[in-house]
Amino acid sequence: MMNDSVADGFARDGTVVLRGALTADDVAALARGIDANLASPSPNAKVASSADDPGRFVEDFCCWQDNADYRALIWQSELPRLAAELLGSRAVRLYHDHMLTKSAGTRQATPWHQDQPYYNIDGAQTISFWIPADLVPRHSTLEFVAGSHRGPWLMPRSFMDDQAKWFPEGALEELPDIDADPVRFPIIGWALAPGDVVAFNMLTLHRAAGSAVDRRVLSLRFIGDDVRHAPREWRTSPEFPGLRERLPAGAELNDPLFPLVWNNHLRCEMPQ
Image (cartoon, rainbow, N blue to C red; front, side, top):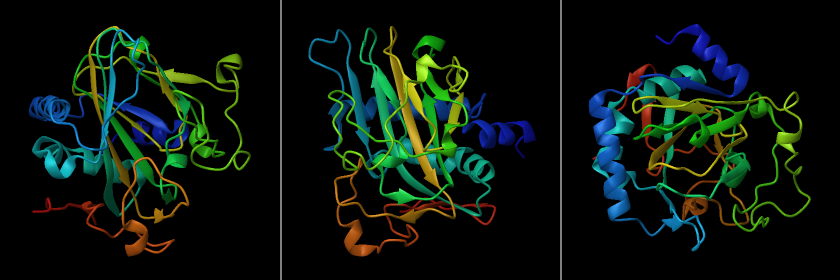
C-alpha cells in the first residue's frame, strides 16, 4: 500500500515524486521502448524544436499498440496500482502514451501549461506519470505550480507560436505571470534518476526547460472512474479519429483505444 503522505501530497499539490517506483527491468524496458520509438516514429510524431536549435525535441503519441516495451510498462509494472491508489479509483484506463525526448543541448523549453484543455475528456480523476530513462538534473526536470490542479482551466496555446488552436480566443482565462508571484504560485520539482516517476493531475500547471544532457522520457496517462468523453469541435492533441462516431458526449471511455489496466483492486490482462 502507498504511504499516506504520498497520497496526501498528490491530493494537495496535484503532483508527487515516487522514488524507485520502477524496477531495473522496468527501466530497461523503458529505455528500449523509447529508443525503438525514436528509430521508428509513428505518423503522430513531431519535432517540437526549431531548426536552429543545437539540440532536438521529439514527441510521439499513442504508440503502445506497436511497442512491446511500452505495453510491458503499462500492464506489468506497478504503475496501474499506483494510479488507482493515487486517484482513489475502482477502475483505471490507459488514456495514451506520450514520448518526449530532448537531446543534449536542446534549448527549446516547454512553457507553462495544463494538459487537460488540449484533450477530449472531462473529469477530475486524471493522472500522468512522467518517467525518465536518464538522469534528469533539477534544472532540466518538470516543474509544477503546487495546487494548480484545482483550476481554473487556462487557455491552451501552441508552444512555439502561441496560437489558440483549441478553445476560441476569450473562452478560457489566460495564463498568469507565474514567475512574477512565487508566493501565489509556488513552484516545485525534483531531480530524478531512472526508476523515479513523477505523478501529476492533468490540470496541474507544469513546464520544463531545455536540456544540457540527453533526456528520454515517456509519459503514461491514465483516467479513473469519473472521466467522460468530451468531443471537441477542433482537433485535440492527441486526436482519436472516429471516436466521436463511436462514443457520445458524456460516455465512459469504454473503447479499445482506452483499455482497462486496473479494475476492482486487480491488474487487468494485456489486450491480445
